[in-house]
Structure formats: structure tokens, C-alpha cells
Amino acid sequence: MTRFALLVLWLVLPSILEAQDSSRAACDSAATASNVRRCFEHALQTAERDLQRYVDEARRRAADRALLDSAEVAWRRYRDLACRAAGSQAHRGTTHAPAVLRCLLELTRRRMGEVYRHYLRASDTALPEPES
Image (cartoon, rainbow, N blue to C red; front, side, top):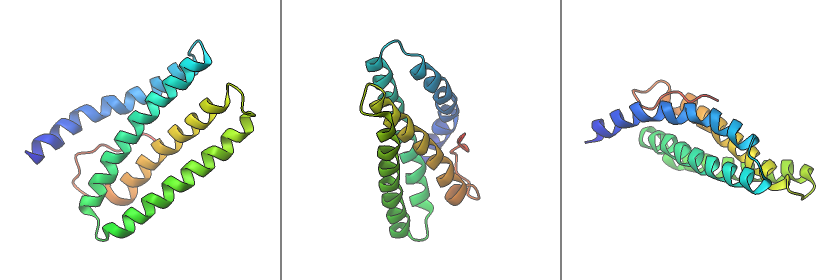
């Protein structure tokens, strides 16, 4: 069953990762500020689900799961603070939320690549190397 699930994931995830770039362009070209925000919220939810798959796989293979979990908590705190700071440059207008969401999305996608490179590259994982 596990091999089947990994095979399905291996077949489906590349199309998800390819769709991420097109989703960013679609969000940037949305007609209204609320549509931009909703688009980035949806893209972020998808990216966070994808990241969780990579983290779960890394946890299965980690020699020290507690250390990996601590690193993940610290990274999420960094991401949230860094993006809140980046969003503060948008002056609390209609561009504030999209600026924060765009930052969260970019750092989340980058983290997927980091998790892959540091924990999964040398393994026999079915997860593809994400585009950073």
C-alpha cells in the first residue's frame, strides 16, 4: 500500500509543482485586490500541504526527529516574522495582505527545496525535487 501511495504521489506531484508557477502569475493578474488575496491564500494552502508531505517524508527518514521538528518550528516562526516585516512595507492598504501572502508562498516553496536537499536527496524517496 505504501509503495502504491508513493507511486501515485510521484505521478501527481510534478503537475502540482508545475501549476505553482502558473498560479503565481494568475494571482498577480487577478482583477481585484480581494481576488488577488483569495488567489494567494489558495496557493499558500496548496504549498503548505505540499511542504508537509516533504516534511513528513523527512521525518520518516530522520535520525533525530525531535531535532527536525524543532528546526521546522523555528523555520515557521522565521517565515511568519520575515513576511510580516516584508508586508509592513506595503503600508496597510489593499496591497498589505497580498504582499504578506506572496512572501509566505515564496518562502514556503523555497523551504520545500531545502527539505528535499537536506533530508531527501540521497534517499530513495518518490517525491520529486521541487522547483525553488
